[in-house]
Image (cartoon, rainbow, N blue to C red; front, side, top):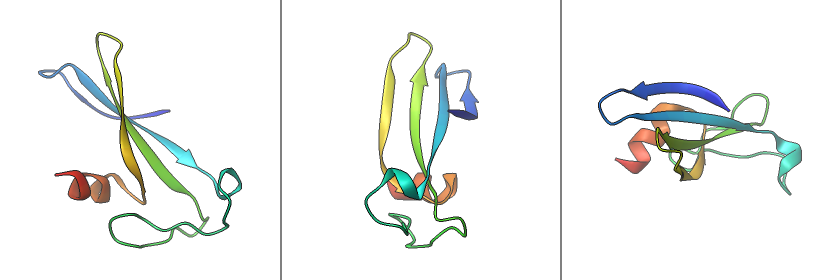
Length: 73
């Protein structure tokens, strides 16, 4: 997991994990928000980690953090 950002007031961190095409049943994937396909065929999965240890997985596969925030905000 890669750390994307930290919100010190909410005491949370946003992390992402790269989903490679071999991990899914079909070769090409597209972003759930914009429909874009990345050159290498991978997408990103995001999650929020709280300082207390709780992890919230964010639903969907996205090409960027901007698409994930637009989709869920």
